[in-house]
Image (cartoon, rainbow, N blue to C red; front, side, top):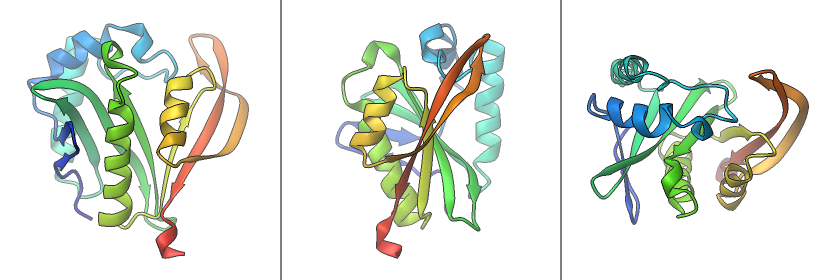
Length: 179
C-alpha cells in the first residue's frame, strides 16, 4: 500500500492537503449548507474545525492505507476526494467526493473519481470500491454510474440528517481483472 500519492488527470491535480487549504475549505465548503446537505457530516463547519481536519489529514499521510486528496484545477482548490475504512480481508474501501458548488456540472467530480478508482484498483490492488448517496443527490448518483459503479443495495429510511430521514443507495466498483 502506498497511501495518498499525487495524481494527475487532463485538467486536475489530486494532491495532499496543505494547511493553507483550511480557510478555502471553510469558506467554500463548510459555510455552504448545500455542500453537506446529504451527508450529515461537515468537517469544515468552522475555520477551527477546518484547520483541525487538515492537520489530521496531514498526520494520517504517514499511514499507507489513508487516502485523502485535495482536488486542484489550475491553481484553485475545487474539491476533496478520499477513501476510508479499508478492509484488507474483503479488499474493499469506501470513497467520498465533494466538488465546490460553483463548479458543479463541469465534469470535475467524474474526472477525479475515475482517477482515484484507477489508482485504488490498479496501483493499490483494492478489488472493490464502495460509495453511497441519497436518491435526492442526483449529481452524485450520475457521477458514480458514469464512472462504472453499480447500485447494489438501497436501504429505506436509513440515514437521518437534521430530523429528516433519507434512503441510501449503495454503489460498488469492482476490479474485474482479478476475478
